Amino acid sequence: MRDIRADLEERAALLESQINSADAQFDKLVEQLKAEYETRLKNVKAEFAAVRTLLGIEDRRLANGASAPKPQAQARPPEPKPEQAQPAPPPQAQSPQPAPKPAQAQQPQPQLGDFLVRKLREGGAMARDELRQLAVQEGYFAETDTADGQLQATLVHVVQAGLARELPNGKFAPPTLLDTIRLRRAI
Image 1 (spheres, one colour):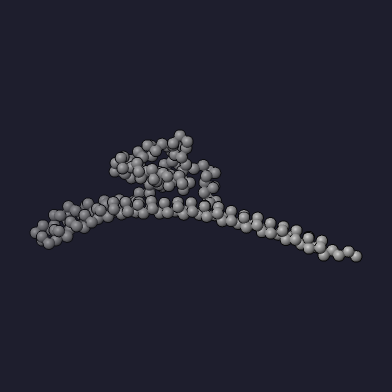
Image 2 (cartoon, rainbow, N blue to C red):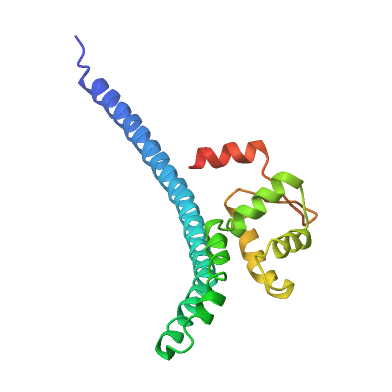
């Protein structure tokens, strides 16, 4: 009988190299998936931070707009109280004014990004100027001149979030069904 230990050792070495090769491929795939995951997560976290920043800006804007009338209304009544000679006329003149202001606070305006997405879905593709005019008409900006920077930043975030898309001609449009499916899968 012949000694087959050398053949078996050769076969074991071949199998070991195949195992090592499979392990290396697996490790490479794991690293690739981790890198892909990190990239996706980084993009989503950046979008999340951008949306949070916009939300903070909108909260401050609405808080400044909503709180500015309230301190003025509260500042006026304390002044007539010390004067005792004229307390009746100022409260009567001021009592109708605070009533409309809370009515405005009851119906908060949607955020600019949500407004833009809704208008794109309703009206289809629109140019930046059309969107700016609609936002000014809705009261998001006091003047058209101040609208450009905030509108541009909001549009960039809306496009990055996949809620709208920029067409080659520069117009903005609602996302396609395929874009919506990709966004849902990413989340």
